[in-house]
Length: 161
Ligand SMILES: [Ca+2]
Ligand SMILES: [Ca+2]
Ligand SMILES: [Ca+2]
Image (tube, rainbow, N blue to C red; front, side, top):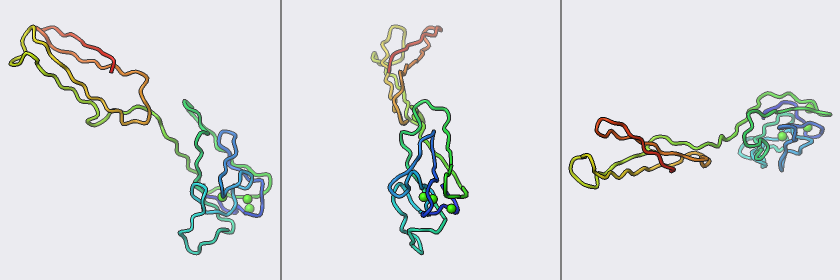
């Protein structure tokens, strides 16, 4: 969030996510636009000059964990004030998408003819599957499906992974 004219001495200004006022250790919920340069609840000090009060210029990166429920398809950001006037300049919003991900070599399949030699009718084949979820959540249920050509007929094998 970047805003101009967000004064530390004037209160009543708020940033809301889904109707809940956001704030942290250096950005009070009723004076969010307070001339800070902050990151995740701490003043950024690697700047010159290193003033705490930026005299109207307000830049904040805040954590809003838990404010958007699972399964949500939208979220609303509201900037409002009952006191301090301010001018929003930049608003960005990012959220993690929790989903299972199979990509690259995260899925591999191999087969061994346990009888050795050529694959012939009546041989026993052993399939091995390697699955690696590189996503951020477990899948509800995964099914592995494979098919093999056998005497000009196709068969399907299916098992729970
Ligand atoms: Ca303010
Ligand atoms: Ca602020
Ligand atoms: Ca102001």
